[in-house]
Image 1 (cartoon, rainbow, N blue to C red):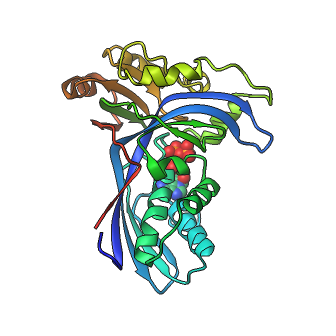
Image 2: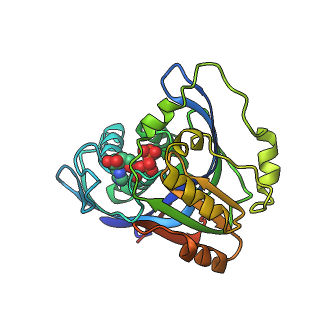
Image 3: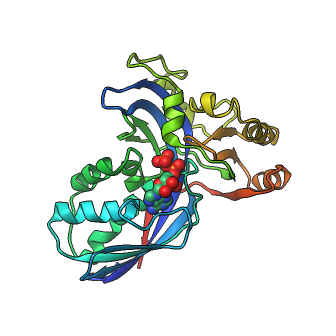
Length: 295
Ligand code: ATP
């Protein structure tokens, strides 16, 4: 990496949830979860340049705001404030990850900014500070600072890296369907009392070391509220399951679905066999990072 570079490019990867259990509603309004997150090759590209002006975000995607509500903008502003810097930045975002789709695009973009901006601002930042800022930006943001395969607990920010991996070929299918993450969680009608998880946490690590295998018990509790009443999504998941993947699930609060195969060919064949006229499909591998900085 060039020292004192004034611009940098960052690849900001998407995630899927190999497992997602919601245990209770917390007093602070967040939900207590147990999840296994996995980054995949699907990515957005960010071009960041140091300026003397304000923080500026540019993005041509019609569903992505470029004002202060953009997570890149929020990440840059918060980091700049914590570091007491006066420098600005122009952040150009090439959006490839479907938006509001359960693939964590906005959170990944925020983590990419937290890792890339110190390089162009010419400062060293402690990991603890990045984690603290990431937690304030959103529950999934700390995960993307490292990426790979991680067990997430608490509100999603207590992370344990899993050195075994969700390796395999991933097929992601995102139908055109609007779902609000907040609505999906509220429909769960969770109380403050913790419900017992479907899967014993201790068994995850051992099972994951043999993943992908057919007996992987990963499930997504949010499917309980998302799938009933949405027959088109249910049918798509059934179609994915019929292609005999190692795992087929809803990712996050949806509407993206994904399936994992051991061979690329199987994922490609499955992609052509499913009936999705108007939506996004993607085939690729898992990755071991959340963000990749490129000179
Ligand atoms: P979450 O489950 O946290 O909502 P998601 O992966 O389902 O995440 P995102 O693609 O992150 O969804 O987008 C959620 C919303 O955040 C979008 O509707 C969009 O308006 C807003 N948003 C803000 N910044 C960004 C960004 N950098 N990229 C994408 N969306 C962003």
